[in-house]
Image (cartoon, rainbow, N blue to C red; front, side, top):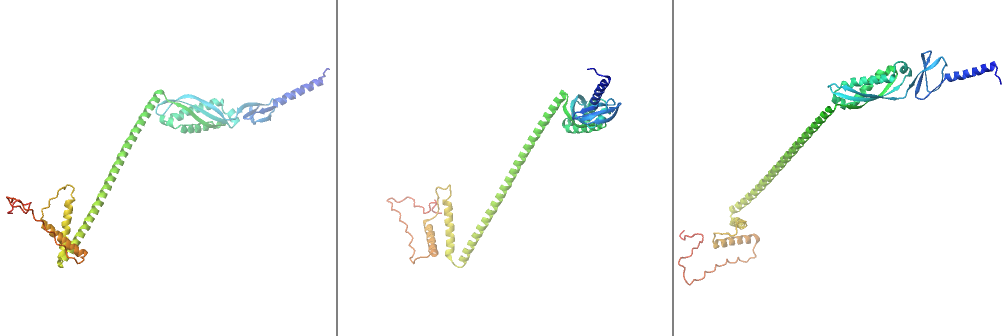
Length: 342
């Protein structure tokens, strides 16, 4: 079948319309933004989904990823405030908020963010001492985030995080820090040991002090009670002496006999109960002992009463046996006095 001129024109028109439709339909994936340029000038930004543009007049200018992205900052040398050289690397997280600004305000976006982050790392870390640099990473991260985020705002970029991954001082500096840490810990251990010894001595001294105080208080209490006992004993003795004196003044002779007998008996008991006394020598006559016993018996009868029986007569002394040969020297009636004339 031969096609006429009209049929060829219709086929060409259909093909042209299909090409125009394909050229005018743009599909934007999720997480991306497309900028549209009309004769080279930015007009609008295409959102994710199916979009239509004017073929041969408008075209896609830039395809931008608006998801949060990670940018590795390479290792670089940093001179600290106290002239210590350290190596540091970092990682930055950023996100495109305005596709038009990111596409037309800066060229090579990632390179710009990378150089800006590296410059601020040297600035922030260079203004700190080494000890502060090693112990205050959170402060460094906060300062870096604030400075870099403020610098990229005209580019339509939001820096969400900047983290220092590693800080490496020189090897000799690490060894010096290790020796310093060891010396500091040894000094701290010696200080703690000295404080422990001091506290132990203080506690022992306080314990000895409290013991001495309690012992002194106990001795004082014992002395006070002994004095009080002696005072009461003296009062009782004085009262007994006064009563005996009153009885004697009243003409009661048995009172003084009772008093003398009591003292005599107490003296004998104290002599006989001595721990180092095995033999007791009593220089006294038998008649004196018998008279004392007779007085004590009379006192007992008066005190406890008598049934009306007269007191038994004292025992007669046995006569000495008659010797066949008279002694040359007459016996001494007092064995404790060798001289009979005295």
